[in-house]
Amino acid sequence: MKHLKTLGLATVAAMAAMAFVGATSASAGHLCTGTPASHCGTPMVAGETFDMSIETSSLMKTTGGTTVATCSTGSLGGQLANTGSTTETVKETLTAVTWGGCTTTVDTLSTGTLEFHHIAGTDNATVTSSGLEVTIQFLGVSCLFKTNNTDIGVLTGGNPATTDINGTIPATSPGGFLCPPHIVWSGAYEVGWPSGTVHSNIG
Image (cartoon, rainbow, N blue to C red):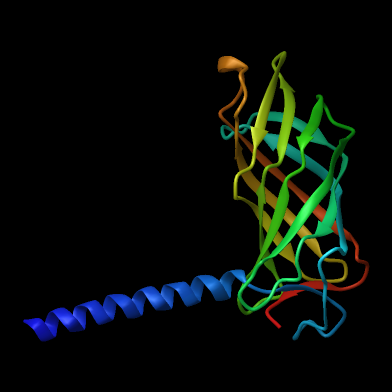
């Protein structure tokens, strides 16, 4: 019985270790420039500018599918806060999140941060957002939505690289029953800087 108990504890420990390694390998990495994309090329470093702009339009809907806002232009831009590594994700401090040509008033109150989690075996990364606060006029009231480690889409490596936004953001404002409890943000963004090939890689 003691042997079986020891074996069971060892198995649990091994599974936990494997889960930790898996989580680390799925999250760590660099944002890289240059070709080929089979390896990192040149890692982007802390302080470098990373900007994305809307390709066609950015759409915001309720979870039930009602369109709240459509914006024809806009951008996500800032500087990398770190270089990333085999054990650390790349983080970006956003300094500007803009919206233009919108069907209703959309304003950014706080830009927050982005984090890029490398997807193993690809040139891509899952993108999460924290601290982005956006107000949207809906049915005559101002509704506030805020990200908190929210999965907002996938960066696809290429020349240019693109980010397909598809994230559900909770409401945090007063505004009563007129404000939807969540907003679904979707759209395609193109990396404008750095120019050329940008991709995610471990090393």
